[in-house]
Image 1 (cartoon, rainbow, N blue to C red):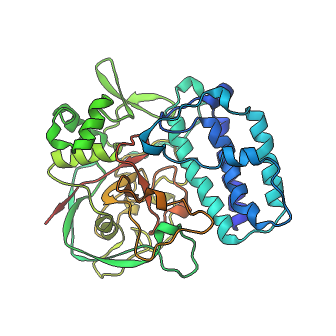
Image 2 (image 1 turned 90 degrees about the vertical axis):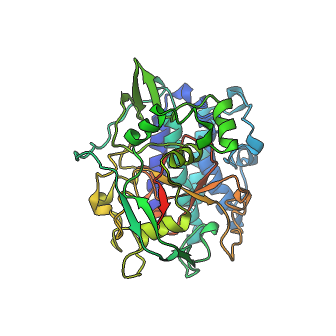
Length: 418
């Protein structure tokens, strides 16, 4: 499938996401730190327009106000929360009319394939962002949708695997393949031997931390994390809810008894606290790479299981399911060193701050994609979730979030020295 066709399919996917929301809920803000849903209805087309129109010399802007209004959908500045009200935004019908004209105008022209791929992946990233935002909407504010069944497996037994010392290749070579600016340049990192969990930490594992008073013991938390936890009264993962003396898990469309074998989704701060309680730590970005793509013959693989493209036997991704599955549901996705579930079922936090690789320079058409986040306040995530597009499961792709952000589909596994 060429990039034009992939973009058309991605548009259908994001259109379906907005159709899940009842009309007046488009003006809801399900996550306090993010824009209202209505912003994203205009943002996707405005981004494509602002990216591609400058390369169309005979096409004039037809609504510069919307081009600016919907241009940027990033983290709030200085930790502040948005203060807009619903009446500050145009109607959904007006935004959809703008979107139709943008699509018609862009589709009548030829575009640079790399810029078109940038538009594609930007949209697919927001499809995942929208999914976890809509996850936080009340159930009566969205239309329910069926999803794939969870595979039946035996309960996962916590195990640790040892990874011998060796090299990890991070980043992407400048060989013409598409990558975001923070993926360049490719380089090797020497990694000492270490041990790492075979599986992501599960809800059942994390429940023991909660019941042991992990959220009440300051010794497991950094100073900033303890302050955040205390100020916001954080006492459990945001996907968990207490009902009738029992823990429930908030799925996309329902509340169910806490699934003990599903991965726990938490913030970096919560993952770090658990790791300290468990006598471990989060792996570095290079360690995660080594566990995922290395093998005993020191030939790095394209994917944990080998060089075969991702398929349904390797896990749920590419929006194939709303909620996660048991951490041991897809043994075909196991890495050569024995780590399971690395490229599906939830991103994985690392201990590495989001920093540029040597040779970094911002992309001239999207200079603000990465550079503004090299601030020591964001951490690298690797892997992917059930809502991550297959094209972004490449080895070099890097995700990043602030350490106190709870809403993303992100889990973790613990590492230890040997």
